[in-house]
Amino acid sequence: QVVIYFGKGDKSTQELLEAKGLIVLGFQDVASSHKDALVEDTPPSKDDLVTIMYTSGTTGMPKGVKLRHENIVSVIAAATELSQAIKLHSTDVYLSFLPLAHIFERQNVMGLFSQGAVVNFASNGAKALLADLS
Image (cartoon, rainbow, N blue to C red; front, side, top):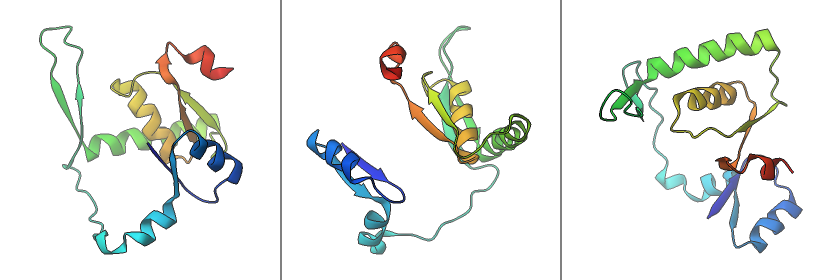
């Protein structure tokens, strides 16, 4: 139950979150207080595993599908092309309501993050969508 924010924090939002029992920290504060634990960044290779997506099992037992770095980079490349076509800006906001276990939604989120867009997540998927919008 920790919120880590990037950039300048909004004091009223921080107070609201803390009143709800959440711990609110700035990313720079966290990073500087854990400098000893930092390790050198190693760029991934195209064959490195990024995630395992699970199929629904419509053709039998559910299966784990390994997605490599190369797969994800191709999704981000496609998102870059699409963002230029639809004029996506870093000020745009996307509401994610499909489960992140769904590959379509995971691709959307990764592509949007790569373009600097903001992604908000519905609190309980599509079920709570109308409540989250009000």
